[in-house]
Length: 245
Image 1 (spheres, one colour):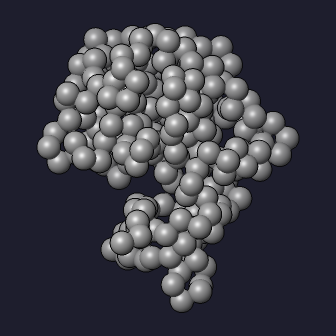
Image 2 (cartoon, one colour):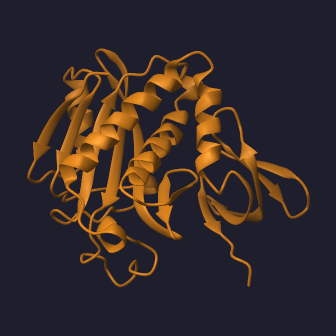
């Protein structure tokens, strides 16, 4: 995958900008980076705090050649790529299903994948936010979020970006290869403590369930073995680790 990087001082959202570019014919591999976002967002319409130079705010245009039923695996693939990027800078991350990266139980990165219909076919926009520093954290997240600076000190954003693009390109090729979906699920399994045996509470809409994680389905959905022994398949929802009291 060839990449082209466009860097902006300020954007509303790198994902929004990448969607606009995709609809105007942008090729696969276009990367949008902003020093600041004024309307950054995460899953389920949540806000992603995006103060100037406090994080890496990055989106890439993909035009995957895979069956539509496997598109959810792009988020898992991206989680693997971000995980390995952070390892390269001395961290020991954990992938929290489905789109967060944690270090020492605190969130350091989030992923937002969105689809867009374009004149050239379906595009998938993958947005990644990585916390570079913690000084901008509000009191309500200071205990649940962390940053590269807090753990390993200052990291050059250019080096972080280059490493992330390298791993994204590699695992994106893996996903599109023969049996790529099985390979990505296995790569995710090896990097996430949430794959099996994690005691969790899952919020799905207005429903709440608790149980143990029991692997992933073929499309990346999370299997939960509920307290009554039944298996529930979670396609989308919020997962909370329930630590032993």
